Image (tube, rainbow, N blue to C red):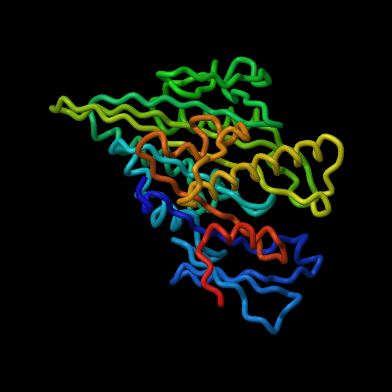
Length: 330
């Protein structure tokens, strides 16, 4: 896989009402023109901030529309040309992952990446006489795989493996769609079935990882040419600290599973970028082992866009996320 097939961008949200009331201090700053992110250690104010470079860096002044046009549009365009693609958001709970991926209706500039991708795909399909678009939507909750569009959304699905097919999710439903509206309806249905819960950091915290996959087949008019590809749209649950979220009981159990799977994801990423690593630990988690997951990108021609979401607060999580960029500090 070519190095340029992976794009990593960072987006930093403004402080929310709770954070302002607590008089939290901003330690993250963004220089968008050069794709730079700066992290200041509040315990060492005299030291220069750590500097990280990304393929794109965005702050509160930038809309989701701008991020899509500059970063995501080329990837989705590649999908319509027959290249598999994955877009996923990664960050601490409450940092804005769902806001970026799903967005809001108003203002229109903040419409999410997922609905924009739907529009992009069907605009491309409209230029061709024949096309087939099918969608699936699953979640990984407490390391159990569930079909968010299935007849029984609580049923646990199994991962199977066949020599000619590889690893796949047995029983995952596929739904044929003919328009953007139908895609959005499937997304709404799936979101209503997804596990969410209240924490001190987010009243509607995602308690599961969700993957919406669009499978495309396009036949060009007048040519004996079929293009097939899939686009994976991934909304990861946020990493958590119990002291910050106040998670207890079932919420705490969910947080432990979330953090373990995200740790496995980080290990896989580290192994992929380490040229000397002989083993990539895909099987350590359902998140990294399922074939439509964010890191199963070596199974074909893939382009990947990774969106890191920050808050401006003093959080070690920001330093962990920044490690996916290139550190250029002394």
